[in-house]
Image (cartoon, rainbow, N blue to C red):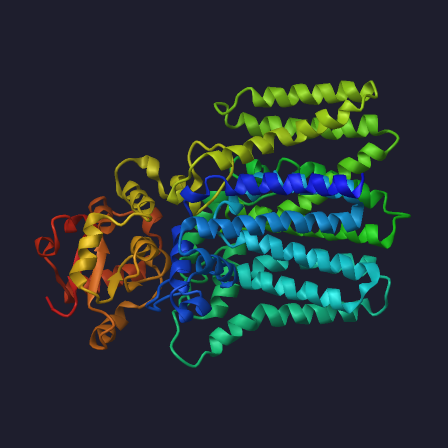
Length: 615
């Protein structure tokens, strides 16, 4: 392959990836919780630094700020539009494909690198997160940059590249906290087995120290901040350490009630990703997102370990890097007993693509390739058939086409025809590519944007969790409430006009405040953080808020009235003690404003309390 043809091929892969992830950019539905936070961060320096959800400074989001800082920069350039945030995500995704190509090229050559980049771009869950506004897109890019630095350090470029790897993993922590540390064993093992220089443990220790310092830099500043700051969302005490190692740590891994909504989150997490176990990554919820090439990648790794004798240190380092990345990540995500979403597995996509590509190229180069390569293709096609059969009404011909292509690949291999390369690759990518195209072509609801997935689905996972199929009860009311997050209704506009520039506090968390924060520059104070469960403020603090002038008007969205009439729902409300306590205090001590005084549609927005006027 000439240098020019390689550049053209790589350019084609990047263009295809950019097209898939930028398609319908102007009509994109994003996770409103994070989009509203970016709007606030673009208008307020304090909100920007603390990842504040609202410009009033009540509460922060439940993640560190780095991913939202990059999205805010996009908003600063283009103005606040969903497409501006989506463009940043797409560009980060394209950059990740490019970096993966550069890493694999240094390890296994240009052909393998091109194949790895293509397989990565055609991974369904990669497309899903790159079309959403979750932090995972930037996380994957930063971890790939760390892998690039480790690869350079193995080549004999000294400690400097290893230190930079620590910096990028630390920045990954500032993007999605402990999720970034999953790759550390693979990175360390790669350097240990591949580096030719001495004092490897000492150098690894230095890189680890850099990782720790960068990772904890923002949490330390937040915890030591001397002045007022937003309450740290999804915690019980406003501690950033509880957020990092509790709600986004222990609660994710083993469940429990660490952090606000911990018990609720564990129940929801298990329902979203299925129960923990060795086959979780292949189940109906997750399999179509990431599992297509997983057996091929693991099989390639096993063969590489068995044939490791005589390999160069650089080659061993590559297998150790991607193998450690994949094995540790697969174990963590398979057996996580707490909060788990299928899109977490996007972190595995680069390792799967690199290992699968290297395995295919290696099999082709063997003398017995006419047996090994077709066997790998047939096994991958069988898994694709199983995944596609789970949605029999969606492209029903595709699974049979995949089997036919696999059979054609076997025949071509026996006849020693070079068409085996084309048929084999088409067989392998047909299923996941169809999922990716479907993801780019179909619109998603607000509810789906909170738990993005690729390909066909009869019922989005979050819909099943909150019970939307149970009818027109409390659960259905809550889903309608969430799906209205991008709209400011006439009744909500009337409420905003009535408060005449005063801060409007909105009860029940972010989904009640989202329409105001996304569509206006009004000063809105969401009470309770995400879902309303946070003690931000606690019911006991409301009197002092009223006395200090921080709280006068409180809007109780209509959804809570509907939930109350429907008898409530443990699935919807979760462990909502703080929410119930605040609502009880407001109902007792504040006077409801008659809807007729506000406007003809005011009743549709909910109940507006005036806390300056006692009952």
